[in-house]
Structure formats: structure tokens, C-alpha cells
Image (cartoon, rainbow, N blue to C red; front, side, top):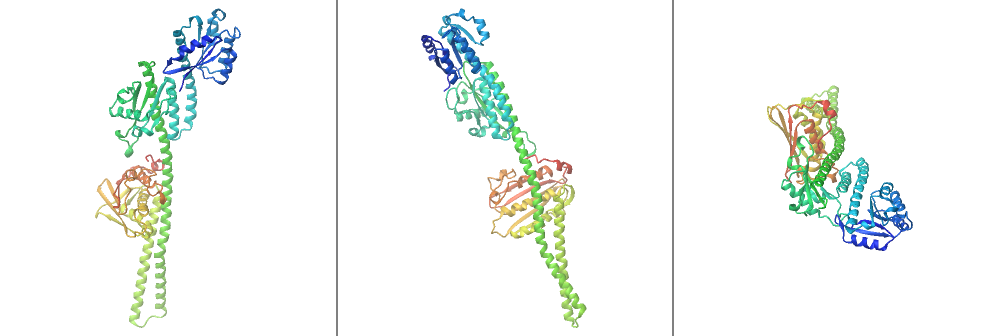
Length: 579
């Protein structure tokens, strides 16, 4: 437990005895006194070499020699903390003129022993303590400013910020001699306190549960924000006050926080009754509001840094996934081309062989001639069909890969774009036994003016997710239905439906947040859906939602404007803003 440390230096035993009796039961700010005695200059200097944290020194002038006390005062000013206050006591005032001594030795009080009544002595000591605390606070200001500067340089995440704000809270407590507890999120108040568990002044353990409930109740009663409210009616003692506050991070678009989602917190403080006046409360409130404003600014800054870091990761991952999609298409198309090209080559050889036979030895029998003609026709049909198949694959790949690598806005038929995506993914779909089908309304114009490369990345990502997560490894009869609709001339709707196991209900509300995935054990990063959402919302100006039930599959609904208004140059400069 903290005590006020008083050093008494006097060669008279009775002076020590009476001073001890006077201070024995005294308290200042509910803190007792501890008296340390020295009977000579030499003994006092020896004590001060080992202990320098005295708040007040009561020093007799005349001890071993007439100037012992003055020499000790000079030593204290050179070697002890500047917050230590000195009261010079003498039985012979004429030996040490008051005015000269106060100025020359930086002594706070000059007290003749004949005037040292109990009330006078306590009054002087209390005044010295107040002066000592003021000086300590000023010194703390400088230390805190240095600490702030150093700590702020290292603040890069919320954990660092909590360390920084703890320093600021200590500064606030030191300046106003208060016990102060800050909670920055009452929705999880037991995990959101900035405070010391044990107060140094009284040694008591803080009841964070009661303090947190008091802050919550202040919000439930709609008490005025950023005002100090007596906490007696909130479950705390009379000496406590609560200052509720709200912070709402500025966002735009779909991620904008509703009013009810604003972060709510509060600051509770306790000020000693003898210090509590309207002025001291107002002074503390002004600094407390500044503290909470700084918290909001610093927290928003740190969150911005974190978001920018995540956004850079999203941009990198977006580029990586575009390249990965192209690589996947190259592999798939190369594999898929082998079959039609192989058949076409065989059919070509058959045509050559039949033609050579017809030229070298034309059949005399009409039936044999008809058989060769039929074989030739079948071979030509096989050749044509497989070359068409190879051409379709190459065309789909060329269109899709060029759009993936381009940010140019063009007009394209949505049905063709989706079919191209499925065509390039067909090897993987076939390997996993998944059959895709595109459905479109008859006589509906699906001409879309936008960025096919970005939209194809979203479609391919949905297909890849279905392949990876929707169906068990041993299931070979999965299916995908994609419905293309145009409810009105201004917009398109793409409904992507699979019939697999569905999205985990715990993940569904956060499906489009970065780093959210149920497939981390399968190598999932949790960035694919976040990237898809950013493409649809930020680049294509639309929206994407997901409905899912366990065991009944997932349905993704993409709404797109008929014409994207974002300029290609803007896309190249665009930072993916929302996570």
C-alpha cells in the first residue's frame, strides 16, 4: 500500500516522538504517513543514498554544526528528485534568516519550532504534499510525452494501441489524482478494459464486472454522452462518475454501420471528496473527453492501417487468382484439346487412307464402293466435329484469357461469357462428376456492357468453390444451374445454384469477409469470396448475396447494372476499399 514518505532530520529525540504522534493517525487523500527518522546530517545523507522517494523532508538547521541542516538541503536539491519538498525547522531563527534561506536553498517552508503546533505542522506537511504532487505531475507530463512519442511510432495494430492508451490513461490519472478506468467496447466489456487491476494508492482490486455493468446501464438509460454522471445509481460508490461515449467508424456503401452498431464504451473515474469540486470535475471531464476523442482517432487510424494491409493482400490475391484462373484454363484446355485433336488426326488419317484406296484401286463392286463412301463421310464428319470442338475450346479460352488480362469495357452476351467460363472449367467439372447447365429466358437480350474479365473471375471462383467444397469426394453426380435473367432494361440477375452440402451457418453471415473460410484445412485462404464481392460491388457496381441451408446447397444471386459506369482508368487506380 502506498504511504506518504516523510523524512525527519533532528538531533532531538522528543521532536521525533511528537512528530510521530501527530502523523500517526493522519491521512491525506486516504493515504497514511510513514515517518523515517535521522538524528544527524551524516545519518540523513546515508539514508538518502539508499532511499530517494521521500515526499517531504523536515530538516533541523543546527545539528553537528550550525550549518548542518543547510548543507543537507543543498545535498537534497542536488541528488534527490525535484518533487521532494523541504521544510526547514529551527529553534534559533536568527541563525538562518528566513528570506535568504528560502531563496538560496530552494526551501518550501521555514518553520520555527516554537510555532510548530500539531495543526500548523500538519497544515505545512499537507501543503508540501500538494506541491510535491503538482511537481510530480509536471514531471510525469514530460515523461508521458516522451513515452507517447516513442510508443506512437510503434503503433501498427490494436494491441500496440492498447499499450499506448494505457500510457495516456496513466497520464490522465497522474494529472488529476484520480482512479480512472476506460472501457472501449461494452458489448464485450470484460475483454475491453484499459486499467490496472490493483490501484497503487489503496491496494484494492477493481471490480471490473460492476464498472462494466454501470457503463452498460448508462447507455441503456440514454444518459447524455461525454458528460460525467454520478455512478451511485448505476451500482458504484458515491465517489465514482461514469462518462459514456460512442464511436462509429466512418464507412460507405454496403458496409456502412447502422446506428445500432456504433461502438459504445465509457470511462469511469473516482476522485477523492476533498478534491472534488465542480471545477476539478469539469477539468477532468475536459481531459477525459480529449482522451476519448484521441482513442477514436487513433483506433480509426489503426483500423485503417490494418484494412490497407488487408486490402493490399486482397489486391495481390486478386491478381494471383486471375493468373491462377488462366493457368488452370491453360492446363484444362490443353488436356481437353488432346481428345478432339487426337480424334481429328485419326479421322484425317482415315480420310487419307480411303482416298488413296479409291485412287489406287477403285472398287468394282457397287456395294464395296458405297461402304467406302460411307466410311469416308463418317470420317469427314468426325474430323469436322472434333475440329469444331477444338476451335470452340480455343475460342472460349482466347476470349476468356484475353478478358482476364484486360480491363477494357466491352459489350458481350452474358450467356456466351458464362458458357465460356464453364467450357474452360469443363475438365475439372468432368473430373469431379459435376454437370453445369445454363438457363436463359427466351427472347431476352442479354447484351451487357461491362468488364467480362472481372465477371468471369467471379463465375470461375464460384465454380471452383463448388468443386472444392460443395460435394463429397466420392460423389460423382453433382450439378450446377446458372440462371440468366433481365428483370428490367436497367439490370441483369445471375443466379448460381449448386445442390451440395451448403455453407456452414456460422460462416454464412460473414461469407464475404476476408479470411473467412471453412476449407482452411483444404488450402483455402478465405479471400476468394471477399475478392468476388469487391469485384461485383466496387468494379461492376452491383451486389452479390448468398442463401444456403445445410445439405440443400447454396444459391448466389448477382445483380448487375446493364452498363457498368466505372471507367477503365479508374479500375486500374482503384484500391479495393471494403473488406
